[in-house]
Image (cartoon, rainbow, N blue to C red; front, top):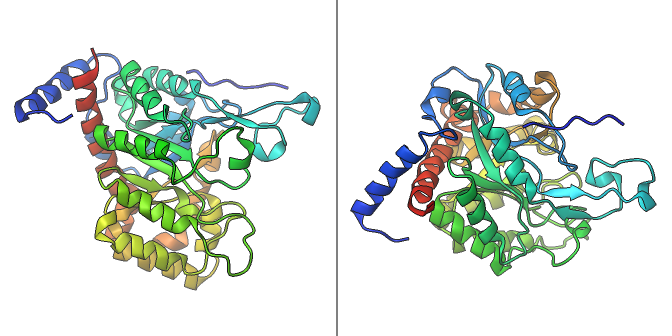
Length: 369
């Protein structure tokens, strides 16, 4: 079988100013991130808040090829791999080498090298090309109290590279049960420690958390919802983006899901909560009927600052496969106000990730020796 491998703190005001100035000097070297305006000033159609360069066996698209795939349609991309590796157990699948978690009963395990791989792929680009990417740290176990230490080490090892963490998973259908050891939880202090650190550094967090368990019994309360709400409230300074609104392949929207989302968006204690509109599985519910499309559009129109658009594509081979999801979402885009559409497709991404770049570079300047 032929495989294609990817190449790839509280301080005084004067100290803060000095840190920012130091960051500009430090990251003007190779590995620097040019001003985001170089990318956003161009007439791109969208920014992508959710993209996997590699798959569940850490293979994918060469980053230089992916730039060509982005072309003139996509301005900036939140760039991440997948934090989990699918084990190839010959006793389970024989000579068939699984590349997806649903293709085998063998376990998944955390693959921390993905962060170094993404960093080196990013560093292989020119400064102008780097301006179009916001790499994300994913190679940590969110059930481990040392996870925040891993994220810190990555920042110190690769200064000038990362803007956020994620997409990482707490609850995910069929995935959570395939990971040996302690099960990740929204109640785990390890997750609190992670979000405390993202608040300290300015890192954006993209979190996958299903809104319900697969195949719940009729009338069963989605206990995950209040846990997720309380997590966001416990960390008001951490930017939390909910990946594809908690929908999965099997986990479908729960009753009154839009009303639940609106309560979160309207809550003044959850101003740090954002929703990632991505993935074909979410799209099929949104565009299922004119009524479902209109209801989602109305929610975005009421809260235009709180939604980002992402493809959730994995290692695409060409632009047609990468951006096919954009066509699926067209009925939704058509129902948005011009302001809401611009913010969903580009503006909110630029606002959140520009601020993340600024804060993280300042943190690195103050901590990298």
